[in-house]
Amino acid sequence: MSEAFTLNLWNSILPLVLLCGLVVLLPGWFSGKGNESHRALGWAAFKTAVVTYAVGAVVMAGLYAAINEGAYEQFVRDPVERANFFLSRSALFAMLWGPLLGFVWLVKAQELNRRIGLKMTDGERGKV
Image 1 (cartoon, rainbow, N blue to C red):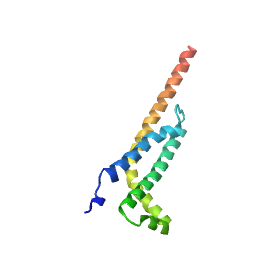
Image 2 (tube, rainbow, N blue to C red):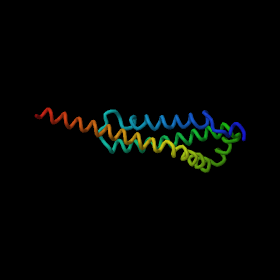
Image 3 (cartoon, rainbow, N blue to C red):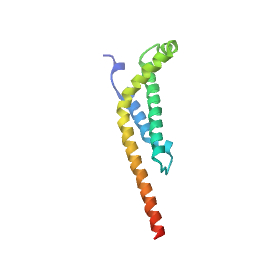
Image 4 (cartoon, helix red, strand yellow):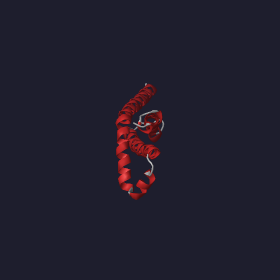
């Protein structure tokens, strides 16, 4: 087996760290600071999944081009088939970052509920 086909830091771990970083940072960015809407948080998680899935396909295309000559010509020859190929490869990354996105969503939802609860108790204290 050649060196290009082995899993190493550059072709597996760093791309996965990049995608996991997106999954951790984007929901907060999409929902905004101080968000008090579960609907907005759900949309933020959905947008994060779509963006991360697309970035994963681009990363896979870059990794594929790095070890295979003529990858650009193949893409130009049949862009739809190549895009489907890289999106299917991105799904392999999604099996790893998907559960992380679910966990981030859960943590953000708990924080949202905590903020709403504190706001409710502060409002009640002011009325007493």
